[in-house]
Image: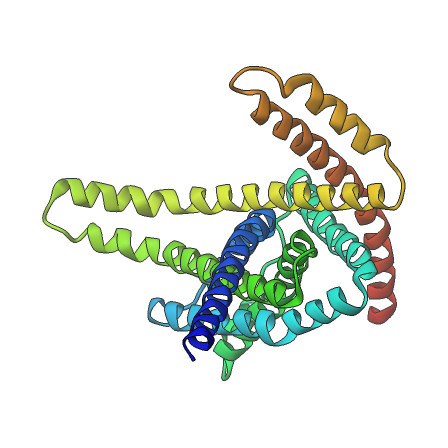
Length: 314
C-alpha cells in the first residue's frame, strides 16, 4: 500500500510538473505571439476612438465596454476555433492566409499614406450612425465589424508564431493573447477618449499648476491622436510587408530575404547597437517593401472599386 501511495504521489508530482511546464509554455508563447501582433494592435488602438467622435461623454465608457465584449466574442467564439481547426487539419493554409492578411495591412496602410499625400482625410464612421433611434447599437456594430478584421490578423499572426506547440498549448496561448490584447487595446482606448474630460476636470481645480496641466492635456490630445494614427499606419505597413516577405520566402523566392540577411550581418556585430541596427535593417526593408506592395494593390483595387460604384450609381 505504501508503495502504491508513493507511486501515486510520484504520478501527481509528474502531472503537476507537466502542468507547470504547460503554463510556462503558454506564458512564453503568449508573450512571443503578442509581440509579433503589436503592429496590428497599435492600429486597432488608433482606429477605435474615431467611432466615439460626437458621442456624449457619459456614454463613451459604456460603448467601449460593449465594443470590448464584441471584440472578445470575435476572438474567442468565432476566430479562435476556426484558427485552431485550420492549424490542426490544414496547416499548409496558414501561410497563404497570413499573406492575404498582410496584403490587407499593406493596402490599408498605403491607402492612408496616399490620402495624406493627396491632402484628403481617411474615411471615418458616418456621423449619421450617431443619430436617431438605435444609433449607439449601430456605432458598436460598426466598430465590432472593423475589429473582426484586425482581430483575425492578430490571432492568425499569433497562431503562426506558436504553430509548433501542441493543440492545447496553442489554444491556451491564443486565449491568453485574445484576452490580454483586447483588454490592453480597449483599456488604452478608454484612457484616450477620457483624456479630454480629465483635462477639463483639472481646469476646474484651485491649483494654477493643475489648471495649466489640464489645459495642456486638452490641447495635446489632437496631436496625440495624430501621432498614434501615424505610428499605427507605419506599424501596419511594416507588419504587412514582413508577412509578405516571409511568405514569398516560404514559397521559394529568396533574394529579398537574402538581402535583409546580408544587411543584418553587416551591422549585427557592431558593439552595443549591433542588434538594434540589424532589427532596423529588417524593419526598414519590410516597411519600404510593404509600402510599395500596398501602393501596387491600391492601384489595382481603386479603379475596380470606382468602376463598380459608377455602375451602381448608373
